[in-house]
Every structure is written in C-alpha cells, then in structure tokens.
Length: 54
Image (cartoon, one colour):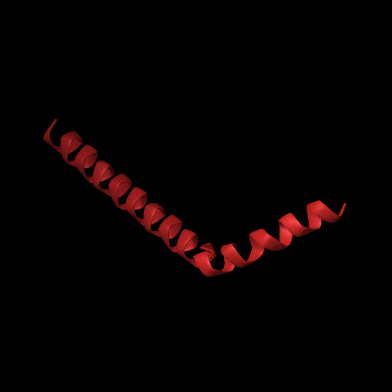
C-alpha cells in the first residue's frame, strides 16, 4: 500500500506542475497579446467617427 500512496503523491505532484506550466503559458500569452492603453484610446475616437458618417 505504501508504494501506491507514493505513486499517487508523485502523480499529484506531476499534475500540479503541469497545471502551473499551463498557467504560466496562459499568462505569457495574455501579456504578449495585451493592448496598451494608449493604443485603445486612439482607436475609440476613430470608430465613433466612422459610425457617425454612415
């Protein structure tokens, strides 16, 4: 029984490490895709102007 418990513990450690790695990948992707505030504030007036002209 001791060996089964050790395997389960090791499996849980591997799963936790995989979850953390996935979390880090998602954070890195979100950071790479982030749009700076300066860019968004410039885009909004252009969109409003286009709607008004239609």
